[in-house]
Length: 337
Image (cartoon, rainbow, N blue to C red; front, side, top):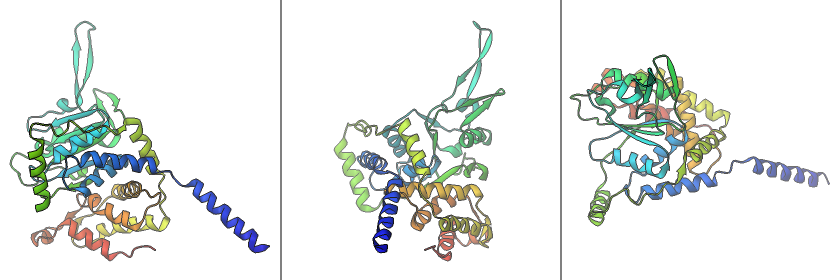
């Protein structure tokens, strides 16, 4: 009789747990549809696509770095087409002024008062091409808008519509006529994504696809999958992903180790810890899980940390990169069970 009661208690607990689980099926289906749309144009780069989608789910901005011609801008445009949201593209140049991005006050003669004309930043998905081409004061104009989703001009604050995501690209090779992004601004990007050259089979597929398309536009057949409200609902859903206390401690150990590492001149800030947490939830969600695993954290760690740490000059002279040091840190910390 006692065993029967215990069994009933266990069964009721299991049912209770099952009922409280998060329904991620609609999110997973939407992610698969977006990937399918993107893969009609983009060859390979599956890791980059996953990271971009996770950044959107985590409500974070992304810095995409790669040499010219590896589809940085094209990928951003395709992401924008799969989302039924406002889209702006801003080409950064050395003569670009903050008012060219944010907007400016114009005197209205009929009303005898100043009227604020919104700039291209007032949209949902912003593509900033070659962000390191603009001078420091123009880059600084993005500080408030990226962190607080608002801008302040002439003493007036303007809230931006949600969702608001910045996708910025930069070329790591050309240094002439560029302005290095300050650490404070780099810290506002949840991910830095490095895009490498395609492999031989991928290069062949790219050439074949281009030959087949001929005069057909690459983006003509891309369909919108998610609306602005869908994105915000999924962002709220992702925040509810379960994270065990030992995994929170694991994230903290990873970040603290960057501050104590002898190979790093500058470690990551607490903002990096929060970014790893949110990104790990996003990776779990796109894989249909309502709980975070150590693998999710490890997958999030490199794109979150690599642009937030600075390698010591001695190690940099030896050719050691931030990615290699972060990998060493990940391997040195015991994975929680």
